[in-house]
Length: 114
Image (tube, rainbow, N blue to C red):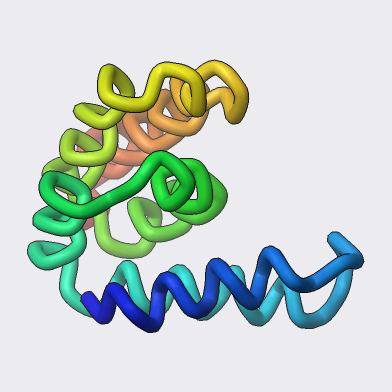
């Protein structure tokens, strides 16, 4: 995972005023691409370097990544940050995001999708 690129995309996203702007969607796609490049290094990033702000930005795209890559380890790695960043969990409904990810994994397991 290219952490510097991820941080640059977050900065660009923050600088975009209009929430429905084309640039916002491009930032979202780029975040998914960066976080999906190498799932093991993304998990390592979550364990060692992820900040509260980055944790909240990831909440916008984690379910898309899980839907594409079915990584229980990624969900667990993300979930462990809930205790580290309780304020963000409450503010951004991270529990709901994680529940959505777990439901994706459960559906894929029950329906044979990998």
